[in-house]
Image (cartoon, rainbow, N blue to C red):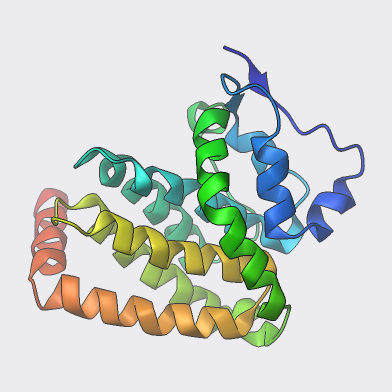
Length: 215
């Protein structure tokens, strides 16, 4: 098994590329290659957390009950926590930076999502930068991602795809620098957290368990 690193000499080109182009570049090559987190996050500027979240969301679509959430949930929490505390660049433990999805998984994902990304490009554009760059807005996004990551990790039946699609909206808003899309993601996130978390008691139970371990 080989690992893959970016082949684009101009780092700025990755910062300016659309999401569909980034996904196509990730999918291009041998299916057996492993894509490293450290390489995927290179040269993206302010969009880097969007790519980190995008890759963290991929396991949610693994069609095996319990597996996708167990992998993707903690990764989403990691992204959200870093936004919540105000990190300007993602931090990854060394063991995680050297790991990542296999290209074959990205290729399957591209087949499904490419037509939707093509439609997205028709109306998505950089706008409402305050929604993406204001400190309070970043903290709010981070908080929602932490809560959604916890919910994704919990064994709530038939929710992985729901959370996965919602988290993709956050990722695309960050990648496309689209504040309007982020507002819609906030609304969807609030509904999901309220319905699946507070009303079901799952989030409260998980929080209680975590606090019990700490104290």
